[in-house]
Image 1: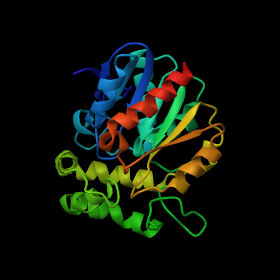
Image 2: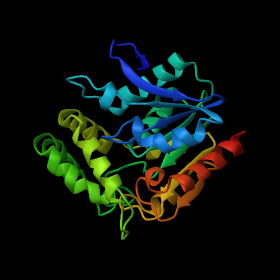
Image 3: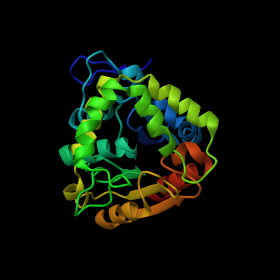
Length: 273
């Protein structure tokens, strides 16, 4: 397995295929690099595709892991250096987008070639002034209770969360849902609780306006987690950002409609060239 040391002796896993423009695919919470298998296969003929298991996930998990977004951003910087990536394009799905935002907040965007945000918001939690977090009005009090529930009842949390992953009002894909359920159950509840707390206290609204990168906001048109207004807000906040919507897809458009997703992503990368 290809591993790198981010500087603290914690081996972290990544996969790499292809040659050309570097593209780093950053997975979501309680996921791993394998969720991007359709993208790796499609992009490797034209790009150098690098896909890490973020710290705390699958091959990058070690007992006692309790990372936050700052740690994950530091790991990403170490990966870029270790792999010798020049002007990589960051593609962040869900929590992966927050890792990209944190990276840019801490290290700037001068060494990056572009940014793709996949079905995510700048702030997960809602309040009276902000309604573009998780759909359904997810509040700070709910977020504060969640880590203990995750630690104590992880299997039940996974089962409750699963129906919201795919497109709303659709037949879904039982095989895909079963696969996601199996992969999520294998995550460490303590690590996931720490990360859930980290991502629900994060707020990148003041930061996104300073992003000076070619940016694409990609959303599932029938996402049950974030609505089109959220994507529109991000596109308005990030100078020059474009929006692309994947029809008949929910929060995981790269898995639900991989061909349409790959076309949109490839078109963005071609425009950068």
